[in-house]
Amino acid sequence: MSQLFGYSLDRKKSKGSAKGPSFVHKDNDDAAQPIAAGGHFGQYVDLGDSANKSSDVDLIGRYRAMSLHPEADAAINDIVNEAIAGDLDDHPVDIELSNLKVSDAIKTRIREEFDNVLSLLDFDRKAYDIFRRWYIDGRLFYHKMINPDNPKEGITELRYIDPRKIKKVIEYDKPKDRISPADPQVNVLIPKAVEYYIYAPKGLRGYENNGIKIAPDAVAFAHSGQLDMQRNCVLSHLHKAIKALNQLRMIEDSLVIYRLSRAPERRIFYIDVGNLPKQKAEQYLREVMSRYRNKLVYNADTGEIRDDKKFMSMLEDFWLPRREGGRGTEITTLPGGQNLGELEDVKYFQKKLYRALNVPESRLESDSTFNVGRSAEITRDEVKFQKFVVRLRKKFSDLFNDLMKTQLVLKGVCTLEEWDDIKEHIQYDFIADNYFSELKEQEIMNARMALLQQMDPFAGRYFSLEYMRRHILKQPETLFNDMTKQMEKEISEGKCMDPMAMPAMEAAQMEMSLQPPEPDPAEQGIDDADYKKGNI
Image (cartoon, rainbow, N blue to C red; front, side, top):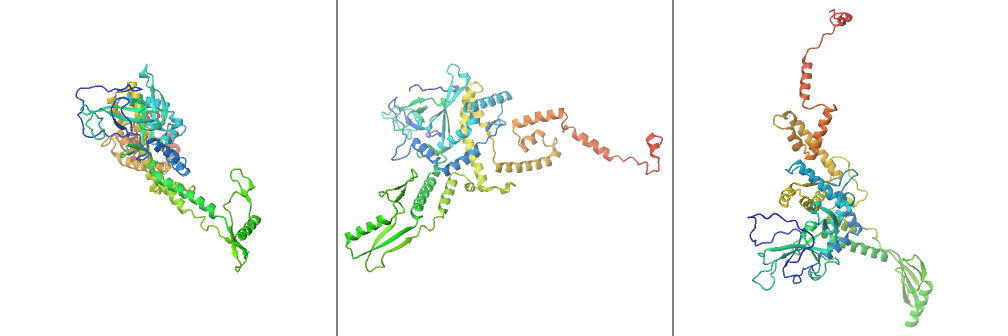
């Protein structure tokens, strides 16, 4: 096996951890291409052919061409704008560690390294472009560069890799008892030899493995999660909209041709040629045509109007000869198209395109608005769209997981084995500016506060305050700690009352309210001045 370019994060070798052979392949959700080992120049990678299937290069090119269509671009912008929302004060995404059972010092280190990862990606400024690129191509590659002299510095730079130039490969060992290489799809009892990426600067085309072999840990990879199991390739979310977009294009093109050809009114000239023979009649007809027809031609490229007879315009009239015995010379008019204003078929395919991209059809209408009211007024399509955006964020977060794994392992915050446990409890919180989601959160908060008010008399008896804040109000750990510090500060500064002292104060007020009121001196016939002096 040749030396791979880059670096690898090695796991600790422990006794008794070896796994026996299996009769099924490990589920590779990254659509890696399995090949059989056969030396440096003996193996090939099947990158697709035009007869049977499209390669990743062709699919990516098609996806990028689709994104240039106005309707598809508008739908993509809606999706990316919902997924990546940011304001001037906060990052578009933050890390959530409330479910992670580690010390506060390690959590602080993890948050610091996540900020470093965002800085390496320049995520505050390029978040929209990165997510849009991932959504259109269906995959995203970055080269994780480190300092080979000092790997503990972590990742020093991230460089984008064109997905048309890189492919992941799983190379299996060739069995010793067979001369010909085994089919890795059939003989699955062969142990896996190595995984690597093939990078070709000029693009991956053909079958020859002529690229650079790169170690898998040196490349960050995130894909859409849409896999074609038959062709073993990653698909973009735009894939299911290919047919709808092509249909929309054909409808629009045919509509333009129909309107250009049927929009103008044409005239029919019936020319009386009498008893002239055929040749003389045709010559006479041409003379009349050259005399009366419109010889001006409009050039759409330059905007000029020229007198050029060699050009035939779409407004060309019809000249027909008529023999003696007819009605003589006559001019009639052919009407233009009658249904030129109907766009129902175009609107249908536009809605079909939006449905294929999981975007609500109501967003097609430029004047469509939503009522500012309760969440009951939110349409079902908007709720489904919000869930779709959440799924996209989850899959995109694989990029952060990959980069965080490399960063934490290199800097010694955790090992690879510890990372397998840590990553299950790490969540990424994206900023949401969807008004529908805001309305929903307001109603949820109102319901939580109502429940909290009902549980308040039982606080300290059946429920702890921390339980009520974490499980009823659903406060994450960072918010919980920040709110606790802020409340302690405000109590010490006298801005608000200590909630623990409020029951005693309420009891004192209740006791004072139960005492009988002092008698009014005027009602008892006592002089007010003597009463104030204390003589009475």
